[in-house]
Image (cartoon, rainbow over all chains, first blue to last red; front, side, top):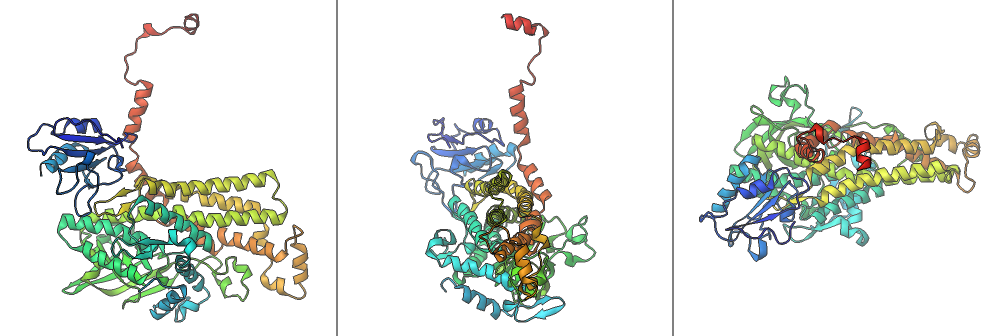
Length: 113
Length: 499
């Protein structure tokens, strides 16, 4: 996991894994994210891992929900109280199987929820 | 209830009055039966070690449900450290028993069902997860042994469950009532089923449309009305009927498998965790199999430690320990065994936190682990037989050794290294026999092949996760596949040298 993440571009911060086993094109996913969409709360974080090992989110497949994960980037609290945090790990979005071509739309929906 | 003692476990097992059959007869006093008792001793060891401070770090865990210390075999993994400690605990128990200790299947079943019930609820609005958490707490609070029952007889493998001429080839629902379901069928090769307080049933394959009645998961007491067990035979099993322990090889411990029959068993709704949700049956199968494939990276390694030790002793007793080829074979056995351990640990350290909050092993590495398990124990066993020599299968019996006339002859001609009593040499030979071709080989060899899924099952999972396209792209990049080719750029080797 990269400690600092990618410098914030627009409203979405992307935290990449190291990229040793990419099942998906992480750069393409990042490029498709709605970084300038005003419907996306500022300070949102997308943990973007290339495979299901989820290194970008410290091996956690989900950052929100009943079992709260502490993966908000740079102090941003995860979970219902803070800006959205979404975990992509290969073809999983928050632990739900998602085909590669569906990842960007799925993440976008979650960021706007 | 606090953690049980080994004695309390054995008594609790006797109190169940299970319906166990062997050699065509019902066995009433099964806890003292010579063929069954060694397998009970194995599970008793999971209680004994849990009560010893020097093993507490591996044997106990803190329940995320109650905050209390529980036996790790009833624990839902909460970290990658939990996953690795599980593997180490299994190696420890393999070392202490030289056998399959059977309690892993229940542990792997509850960890698989924990996440699957959560995800089913999220998708379907059911309440399986809360039911299941209550059940896990019941197991933990009472320190119970659960059998994870997955393998159906399967009948004609070319047909799905609902098209089998005999539907009982897969456990299925025969009646849905207001208060629960009634199930029928059987589970085969059930490790430790006759030593369990509880049975956890899961489907054995990913179910498709039409299989709704077969997509069923539930738990029930091992002595529920309608359940009975037909005990499986093992190689050389009737040696345990003989008065002497010598020829058994492993006197105190052994594995156990049985055919478990469900003859219209009623299951109340609060014990049902899947009832027709086809789309989650495959995930349950894969996750249970994944956890169990990780398990083998611990338990078989522990038994391997015993076999390597036995081979080393055989070399010592034979007076061959200093031979370079013997040393090299022991190194090779160790290398293979530690490779298996590495796989068990690797899939643990690369585990992930699931949406349900529990931790799951890395599926690819767990399948690689088990694939190696289908091979390496065979090679370790081959090398042990090589080192031991033919005596391990040609020795006279314990009765010959005990004979007034023949005993001194056996002593004389099977003596080897001068400081070693012949009887100890014979004991080690019998242990190697036990683990390589005797009763222990059921667990160490054939179970390594087929337990937690036969080799092809792992290869399918490996293929699914191999990310081959990425590897092709790597090769293309290195080889510059697609780069324009210009003949004029090519220089002769001589020109290159001059340059």
